[in-house]
Length: 437
Image (cartoon, rainbow, N blue to C red; front, side, top):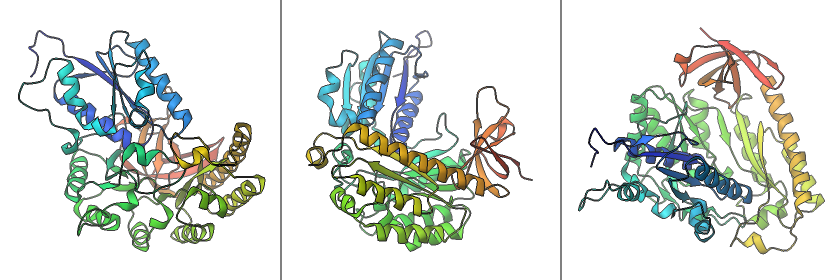
């Protein structure tokens, strides 16, 4: 029920912490509310309702979530603050104790948030249930040059350090027709690059009878769309199939970039983590990826200080990571997640040691990234323009297929567009280039 023209529209704000899947779900909420005549406001502005979409992958992210809640209350003292997401799913009790929090809704209830807010605002129509987000497709991606698309939810793995299966539930695939329709809509609306995301995207289709696997989904998207580029979010090494590698090498519409988590380069630690591979298998698959092209970007995640990781174990991880053709690292210190097996394992590593090891791997990752970026000078890459690099800079940032940022001088009309970029030089940690003809 819309308000009369004399009535001010209700206002809301959303802030999102964590993964691309969270960002996609926040965008769904935002677009549904805007479509119901709500006014969207940036985080930090006064708004009637604040939605905090949380993450709980580490203790540090928990702290960031709590800080975001406090900032929202400071920005809008009289607002209704609603906390949702993974932290809300796993630690609702702690969040309810925060004086700044009005309502906690876990991931299981996230689809109902729009209806709940409409009811709180007195805008619901009696007898007419509000639609959930489960059937909603986004038409744009506010504030982003690329669009993230949810293809899968949940995880059936049982990594001993990870709380996400508890936060997100079992693996479920988004129906094929819905994914394809969403992709087509975004392309029609001018999106040039999409990122297929989920918790465990390599499991796509495994829960659908006679449905396509991830490879089949990608083939259909390529066949049913004209020119947009497809990028994958994180994928497990044992799910990097020969079919996927053929697709990446066979078309320039697949971004030459894969993010493949390692977590540890020590077989004993991998076993304790309950990871489904050893270092020999990981090396073989990474080398197969690199054989596609010397210019392919290969990122990874590494956890330091997992229980039982002694100095020798860490040295093996460090040397293993150094020996691989990886182009960047995301490094995390082990964080004890409530209710996970690793929380109570013997051999807990002290925080200072975890941090020290993280710093060493971060330095190694920066070195590898620097060398890879330098290797791209003189090349031409197709890149998506992401907007101004800095507020007062004349340069915009272009993201290449291989996941390198390049500073280019170009008009704002190209924001969000795929363009050829000739990479000219590397200076002080940045690549520079010019638009290709």
